[in-house]
Length: 114
Length: 111
Image (cartoon, rainbow over the protein chains, first blue to last red):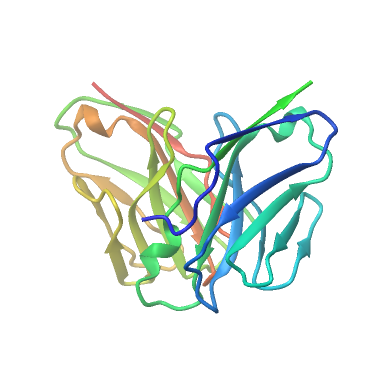
């Protein structure tokens, strides 16, 4: 079972910021929070990941709650090319029961309106 | 650095035929996995490996075999293809808890 919950779908206007939420209330102290996205007819691609502190890269920002039970992926200016399914998953840095690290939930389908 | 490569890109099989989907990575990643994605659905884990010689089942392993004789290669074998195995198959690799790299996928149709 996926250990994260996300809204099924969200909508945004082009060039506006988008905040995609993810709840992971059972996260352990060593789990990393990963975000991936899947554009139509393509394989998933990595977006960003973090452990405790907020993270920024060229694609997005990741805001992690202080208790780590939720996180938010922030796209600062949505473009039409950002329309995709966004997945939030947890990855544990140990080999035990590592199969859980590969489980993707249904994700959030983001629509971007021109 | 080619990343994760998958062959073939497209394949059509008849029911009962067998075949092997190839996956290779050149990043020296310990972890590799196979997913299937049916139309309009999310990814489902078939098998995964945490290192050469070590494999384990995921959510939907029935009808598939894997082996990991080298770090680079992780082939997925369909033993006797069925129409229910029509899907897009993705292979991925990563280091422990780090970014997962996905291949371009193999579109498989079983008639």
